Image: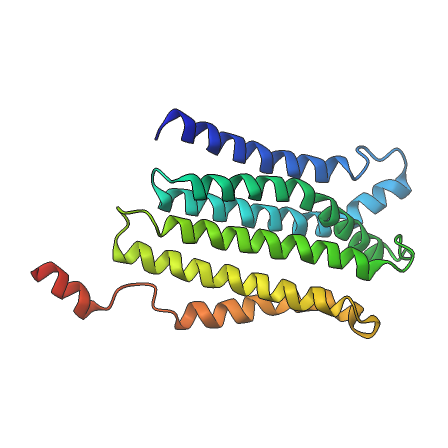
Length: 217
């Protein structure tokens, strides 16, 4: 790994860590009284969800980085675009987490009925980051040293991230209809089912017959 690649990896890791820091700092720091402490505790589940989302994208980048080898300008641009997007995405993600915490605590909507707009912004960021991540795996498939097994795994990851992006698109479209605004976040709950079905049916490894023929040649 060259020095430039190491710097890019370190920069990407630092950007994701900074995004998590921004999300935590936005909660207001230490709670000065019991009421705010109670609100902070109520916000723990939403923070865990937001943290898991950021970690999901970071881990995907790490996986794609291992596949790409030396990489090229496409992977570099996609990585920089992903870093830029995650630093913007953390703001609607933090707002979504805060709104969810307010709902758990039984408080009124802190966004004065603009919950649909907030989820639209969140969905737009989720779609863009999913597409960028799919692009990272597409760029990784251009690695001339990647074997057939690596190509299949990278292609499977592309489909998974396109499923994530399509789910975000459906949820975002629903936010434009007042009747379906409360249901829009629920669309993301279908991801374990849709991805699970794909992952269980997709052939992640080369068929045994093909592998045997390759060994003979």
